[in-house]
Amino acid sequence: MKRKYLFESELQALFEAAKSSGKPERNLALVITMYRHGLRANEALAMQWEDINFPAQEIFIRRAKGSVSGAAPLWKDELNALRKYQQKSGDRSTGYIWLGENSERLSWIDLYKLIKRLGKTANLNSLHPHQLRNSFGYHIFASVLKTARIRIIAD
Image 1 (spheres, one colour):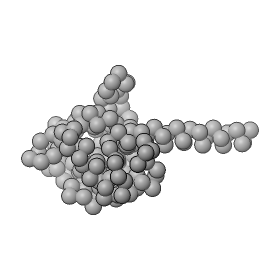
Image 2 (cartoon, rainbow, N blue to C red):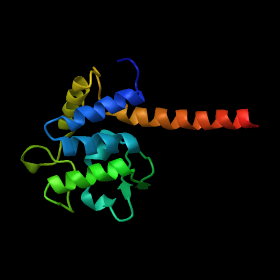
Image 3 (cartoon, rainbow, N blue to C red):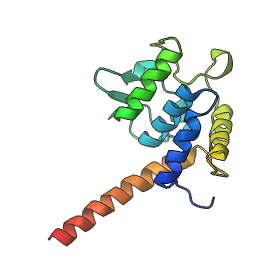
């Protein structure tokens, strides 16, 4: 895949691959959260349960590389996926969110391999974690352009 972002249909295929994986609750919550917030791999891996405010339906993102950290709203499907994962993982309310084998924090290489594996299942060869961030940026920009075009036509 030469494009650095995914089309909506490819994202849906990736979400379906996550749902049918060995750890569907974790994997779906992870890929949705990474995409919806344009997270870098290290930003996702740094997330802790204390960063999620379920009653307010928001998440605190610790940005890397000089980007601005802050709270962001959670989408309904993302919120549901995070709740299901939290329940599946023993209703933890503290500590790192994304755990791998032996209940240890998921490593960067584990995340990379996981996204590659899910990508293969979804027929997205050469998928890597940063493409979820790029997809977020592409879709936000496309949405802004669409809105601008509608305004121009309406005027």
